[in-house]
Image (cartoon, rainbow, N blue to C red):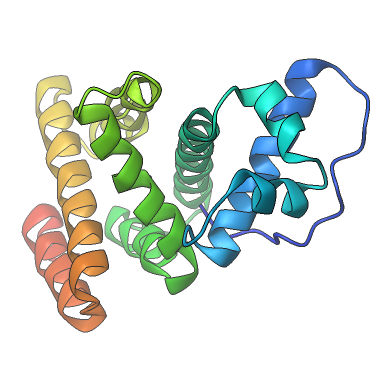
Length: 202
């Protein structure tokens, strides 16, 4: 499940290894989606935003959907990194870490990334082969840091995995609720109730 970036960053410089260049283009594309959403998203618009032609994006990613899959996967990696940074800061309870991460995820500036996440997941679940890679690690990649946090809090490995999965599913469900209803106050209140049940009195 990324702090929004600046889509007006300087164009990706030419040269460098192919994979480095590809990674730079994806990072710039994530920033563009975060800032501008996914309405009328096209390879031409993404190319202009990242400083290359749409043909160059096709060269690196093959199709628009393959690029969108990479945007989603990169966005998810950023969010896991953000969770790790929040957990590493001293003096924060697990519930406070969850609240801070939620604020990032539910921020209106992140709505474009969230919509794209659910859209691409829908394509993958309908059997679109270009979108299938987005399902790889969709749960497992998040469980690793979440399980580690639960074990640190005293849960057994089995309990930690179950609790982590419940937490991940709940947050994703609330994000979908927020996108569908726009009811930020209601969804925030639901999150607080979940945290009360999940963490107790924190």
